[in-house]
Image 1: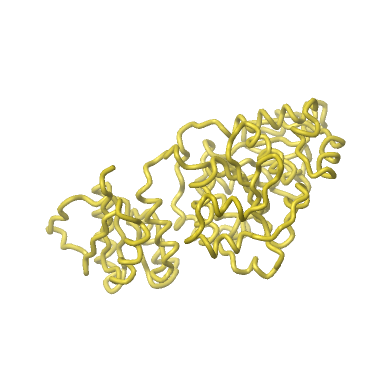
Image 2: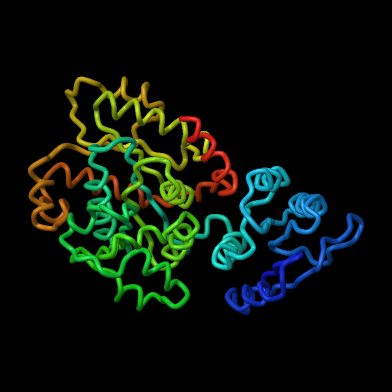
Length: 386
């Protein structure tokens, strides 16, 4: 494998050395004190570049534009998050914006820039998104993860509700080593240690949820969650995320990292209207229809709202229908089991198996929108009640 080249412009030597050590011998990092002048040759074109915007932001952004025009993916590094600087970085064509002191975020961002598009070796993140409460998203997420594991896929189920999540209760598992613990130990966890640390359901699902200490939730922010999901993609074929209930910082970080978003709706007017609002905001956030799938849960053929009205109102085609079998679901939850195991003959089990096949399809990797765009736009959109 050819050594990849990373150019670091205006990055302190201590940061450059730390990144080089973590990236390993397959990546060569070379530093420049300042951006080259417009007529100054670059030599070998780097595979990626980190450009600090201090002390001369205009010079830095001009160089970022030059790099992008030459086909180089660029990461802009500032001393703090600033909406105006992030927008300038976006307009210059940068792929990401990071804060200089956040070594873990810098490391994750560089690895992302160096990763080939559609790298099939990495697992896929599927976020089960509930536009309102009560649509059965957790039931769907738990049983989808189980159906994927039944296909022989290494699967991790991540509960994003770090205070009152239900995933552990659904599977009758005890929580100990939680999300915050894994994030704190990303630098030393390997596959074997990860598997021995996470609770494992008898179906084969590994579960990552809240710890026994509710206060640990405060230690998890969007940047940390992004690093966690990137880490999990290296160790599992599928990561199913439950607990995304709105457009808060953690939900947006999960959505940004997702190759598939299942927008869950039921045949009820409030759920359908909220699904339409969510679908519209997904489009504004850059999540294309290659990424978003509308799933009708508890589907009934003779419901008051027929499928054609649901599709017209929600503004998305129906990708999957999951039937309604309350008794099978209730029995499985009380047994800490999966519907596909506890009620294998139920039509619901068939629907869940079909949904797993849909999620497991390996088409082209959906283009991931730049997170710097999401951070600026989403905050403003939600603040204005979008």
